[in-house]
Length: 218
Image 1 (cartoon, one colour):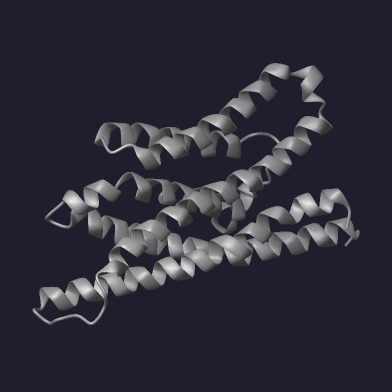
Image 2 (cartoon, one colour):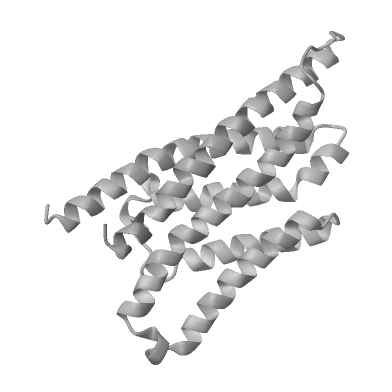
């Protein structure tokens, strides 16, 4: 395997080894948390330990980080390849600096989002993280399959990452909202995210097969 081939499979390897197992764990704890809440609401003593809620939140944070991280890795390879191919280091250095800045800004905003508790700051840093993902996603070199956006690995991935960022931003609101509005929004959006992750598995495999055929001249 050539080094360039290794760079090509880093993104799917991280997705398979890290992201998808976390999706399964988070989904399990989410179901357990909801069952415990429903049982308690009915006045039934639940056998599900109360720690499941905390575990769901903590592993959910890991999942959000992993999804944003694997998205950045997936974007970095084609963007870097385009920079080298078009010799942007000498032809357009300001663009290269801007791209590096957006990677740093996105990662920094995500870290701060985890640590801040004030609502307005959570909104600001969630927005900055999402903006960074979108801006990087639309750089030259990234394969987006724009003519078939409805079955695009890129669009599925960006939307799933944005939903993960949004989930991080509303954690505090979920626990402060007695009407459960934010909790219900969280459940609905993450069911959508789960469908997107399934689509990611299908479209990612398809794209790898297409790349393999292209390299073999098929």
